[in-house]
Image 1 (cartoon, rainbow, N blue to C red):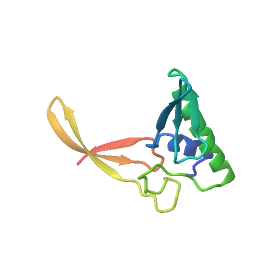
Image 2 (image 1 turned 30 degrees about the vertical axis):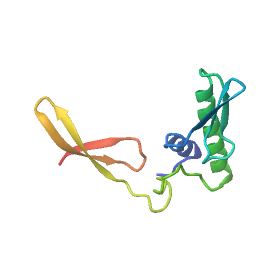
Image 3 (image 1 turned 45 degrees about the vertical axis):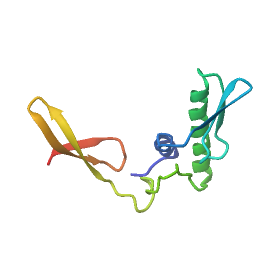
Image 4 (image 1 turned 90 degrees about the vertical axis):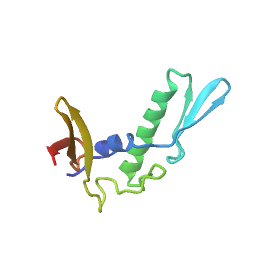
Length: 119
């Protein structure tokens, strides 16, 4: 799959970024230290949306200009569009009316769907 910058940004914004919070002049200040310039300031109702919009805009700019894509702390795996990425299989315990089954969930490289199969 060839990932567009928009798809990459959509993937990146969902990763476990570090959010640092403080208060200045009665307003909440949030920042993501792994991505320089990502900062939001405001009241409780608006600051979180502002932070995610700031993160997405910064990531889109990084991707557009071909700069090095930042990573959340402790995220060492290649991104799905990078060389070396491998889809993984996760085993899950699923409950149903007949009991429990151990299921393999194969994650497609697009990161969009889980295909379950008994195993």
